[in-house]
Image 1 (cartoon, rainbow, N blue to C red):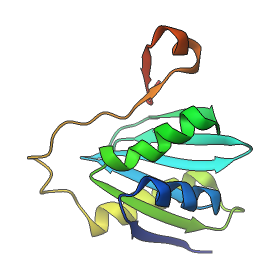
Image 2 (image 1 turned 90 degrees about the vertical axis):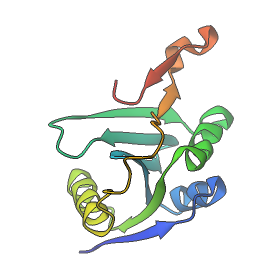
Image 3 (image 1 turned 180 degrees about the vertical axis):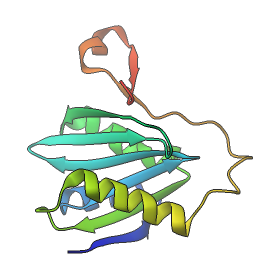
Image 4 (image 1 turned 120 degrees about the vertical axis):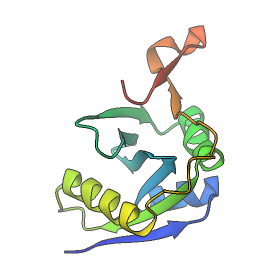
Length: 137
């Protein structure tokens, strides 16, 4: 079984189309990675910084609000990637393979001058207050 990795244009609709097709989308900002999948009527997001011992995971409903948030990731990203894989594969193995592939092709040594961007997703529990929660939570 293979994990196929390709560069995706930084376009919000392209991200949504790939997710609907069952592919994973990886959004990179500097050396932070956000992995996004869509299944079970939810967006599943995993965050990781290479070399870190842990990462974060969140799930959000596929509704107008979170569809707009996912679409907006294209404007925040340094790069966007599409990952095609067999759904019977271990998801964490796919995440690790995708990250290794991206780092081997695009090591990121030229990212020092990029602006600091954090992926911030509104927290479902504090929507009424306008608060936000970092994906790492």
